[in-house]
Length: 474
Image (cartoon, rainbow, N blue to C red):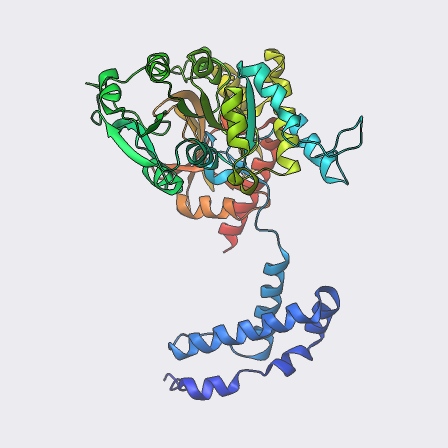
């Protein structure tokens, strides 16, 4: 016969007091290691959570050892880093959730060097006087793209906001309806224009906009023609848009500037990877666009940044706006960006050293070799009957709002659990150290070697073994 369950008020009275929790030996050790303030705060938070659960009628352990353990776990959660290294086995090269571009080794070394002490961020080495932080990347950006001048802010949304605000605040900005995009994270072009204080003027239709649509919309209040590359979607079929060179020629006829937001920051020809052509920064500058903006952590392969290129007098005007200071980048970003850009000075170095370009350019034969290696290692170490492992053809994605709909052929390592579900295995892999992120297809966990770095193969093997063991024992 079941014993009657105590009411919540009697259970609440049985909760140990904070003072009693703090007297326990393990808690005293935690105080010595982490400080009294954190431990006391975790004890109070834990008791508050338990009271809420009891009030809802939930069954929770409220004896002293259980509460102490909960408090210590809370302390440990506060002490752990949540932003930490993870392994991308999803096959999405530019995975926004996993930090987009993996930095090149040269960029990582540059960040580590600058982070170890003081740095020459804003000082002239020759004179010892105050310098300009943008000088670390300005000449590189101009040399690589052909732009007259350049600057950098914290991300591309900031770059567009700053440029439109500086050029067109209080006046009209003309843009095609087909380019009023929304990018991940609620970045909406209409909202950016509204925030800038400019007036949005839409022309054309969703699928077709002609040069005459722009020309008919130009008035004495027009300050800017804006072109936005739809980097995370495609319109196919009955479509038409105005080339950057045509739009620039029209704008200059009316003594107006053109801002071209090309998004991905591409500096190389993506067709060599078997992908569609992605507009490059060089092409936009050559087309006569006065301002060009892009991200630093997409196809460029660098850190998160918003790059602004273009005509010298306009870029200098943008840099004088107060928002430029509010959106400026720090020394670590500049160190990583400069190191990445220097690799592009020799294209062979860029393709060999920049992980994004290396992942996109890896031939299918090399992917297959990597997949076979992973297959052999897993079959060797996993217990029999736990998981069925096989190879199958698949596709990788570029991701990160670049080359939408474009896929690369790959060879997937497929894991079909025999005693538990694919979702359970994928979750267990995410809780390994380091965490491994995968895809689930057809009730199987799949690992895509395209986004695995060479040194990560063995880490993935260890993670799978550990995950399977924890699920089997559980």
